[in-house]
Image (cartoon, rainbow, N blue to C red; front, side, top):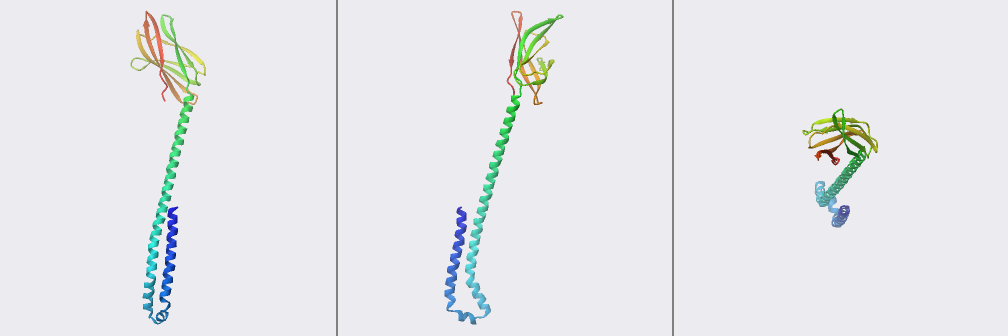
Length: 224
């Protein structure tokens, strides 16, 4: 707004100065018109060049000043556009982040809530098995695979289970976990209703107390 006022001010200054100059110039030559009529043309040209040179030079200076004002206005307009673009980019970035957060929350809501319970040992034909029960308190899952790792982290036992609906339960058995005290990692892999695969990890600790074996289960927090 100040630059617009400055531009108008320069125009008014130029107009006033020109009017004053021509008024003075008219007064100056009014009594010398007969001399101009008999003056050679080349002298008349020199006279007019000298007479209009100052006003032309003055308007040239005003033009440079006006151009400077216009350039500053253009620079301010470009800066405003850059600020608007920056604000738009920040807004779009925040919107994308909010959408990603919403998608993550939605995907997290599709996770099954698995609970693992140890039911004790079973014996069959001289073999000993560990019996477990897995319950789903969350969303539906399918393609369930239970994997028990050994001390080296390699898969020792694998069991496939039927799909689990909400509040669904499956029992399964695995071979006896040998040793008086050991810690194993039991991983339950599955496919969610969204089609994405995931897994949950349980820490299975085998211990013997007074010759009575037992298993303690601790579920690790979900990742992400």
